[in-house]
Every structure is written in structure tokens, then in C-alpha cells.
Image (cartoon, rainbow, N blue to C red; front, side, top):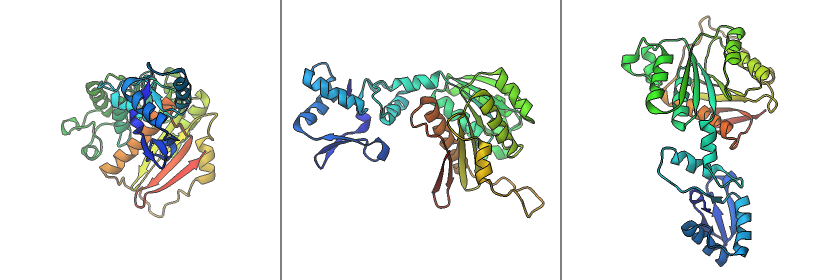
Length: 316
């Protein structure tokens, strides 16, 4: 074992500080001469040389999440593993276990538009073992402005096929395709009953409101957490619902929903630019990673207004 290099320890006001700049990750130990020597020795030599007294001290440091068996190799997922090491405040010394959790996970993504297609790419690059992708739509020219898996030559092709082919080019994630339009709760129930997965993501925007509640229903029925993610011009958000740990989405809407009345006779047209789409996909993908690895898996509903960077975090 060695000191976690990702925590970049430094001395300040008589303390050795680990994880500076991230309030929930900061840990401190006294900057005694013995501790300073031990930190430097652990970085260079590991634990083989330790005396019995120092070994006792190391058990305390391990409980604070300061030690690792990470060898900092430059392999494919080394940056992921380093990140998980940095995030892990538990006594675990092997950050590779979190990458293994991703590799052994299956995620269902329904809807491969401005959010779903980008999430599929991010999760594949992150090393999620299997993706079940569901969509029915074809690619339009307007999709090219905010969906990185599509090219000009793909206009007119099925989104499902193009995203699946793209993932196969960039990763080793197993991809299962479901060519289906979800028109009812029964349609979604068929997907849930015929497939095994650890987490579902609803990125479909029609039928509006209803499809989120269908996922809410299936989540409760099958005891599988789901994330509903979206954007509305300058606002990005997600709802993370986990049966037994959070209230249902229907309960949340009952307490927080706004009126759906509209003064205009026409439905509001889609208004979005690429940065907002990518931020929404990144935000949701990060939540997926935290859920699948159990690192900072906070049950919440989050909304960010990009006009003033106001964050509203609902504790559910």
C-alpha cells in the first residue's frame, strides 16, 4: 500500500491536508516529523518496511481513506480508477473495484436523442459492461448540432443502429438493441419483464409527463432505480428515484408540480444548443456512475439554471 497520490497531500498550519479543494473529501492529520517522513516513505516504498508502531498508525490512515494499492499504470481505465481512488473516503484500498462494478453493470436507456445518445456514448467510454438501447426514430439534420454520435452521412438512418455501431467502435461495451416506440405502460412493462438491468434512464420526451410516470411505476414494480433527465432551454435537471430509498416521482410531482396550462395554442418548439445538451448528458452520466459504484450515491432531484448557475437540490 502507499499514500494516495491523487489526494496530493500538502502541509498547512501544522497539518497534512489531503483532498484540498473538495470540501467533502478533505482529511487531515498532524504534520509531525514522523508523519511527514512516513507519508513520503509510503509514496516511494510502500508498507513493507514499516515497524509495528507505524503499522498501527497506518490502520488509522486506512480508515480515513488515505491508502491505496493503486499502481498508477497507464492502462485504458487508469484515469477512471484514479478518479475513484480520489473520491473514495472509505477504508477500501483498491479503487479498481469501482471500475469492476461498472464493467459488471447493465443500463437501460430509452430514447436516443439529444441526451440519450450522448449518455450512451459517455457510459460506453466509462466502461459500463452492457447497454440496452431503445429507440424507434430516424436521424434528422437538426440532430447533428448536439448529438456527437451522428454524422452528416447518417441522416435518415435509425438512431438505434447508428448509436449502437458507434459504441461498438469506441468501446467493449455489449450493446442490445430494442427497436420500439413506447406508447403505453404495457409497452414499457414488456421491456422490464424481458430484460435484466441495474438502472434505467428515461431520455424520451413523449408522451410528455406520462412516460416519466410509467418509469416510476415500473421502478416500484421491479425494484429497479431509474433516472429521468431533461433540459428546458437554459435549465438542466434529473430525477433519481430508487424504490425503498426515495419517494416516488408521482409523490414528488404531487408536491412540486407547476401548472401545465399554456396561453398559446401551439406546443413550445424545442430550443437547445449543444453545450446545454452535453452538460445535461454529463450531469446524468455522473449520477449513473455514482449510483452504480455506490460512491456518493445521494438520492435527490437536481435542477441547475444556467442563466445564473442556481442549483436547486431536492432531498427526496
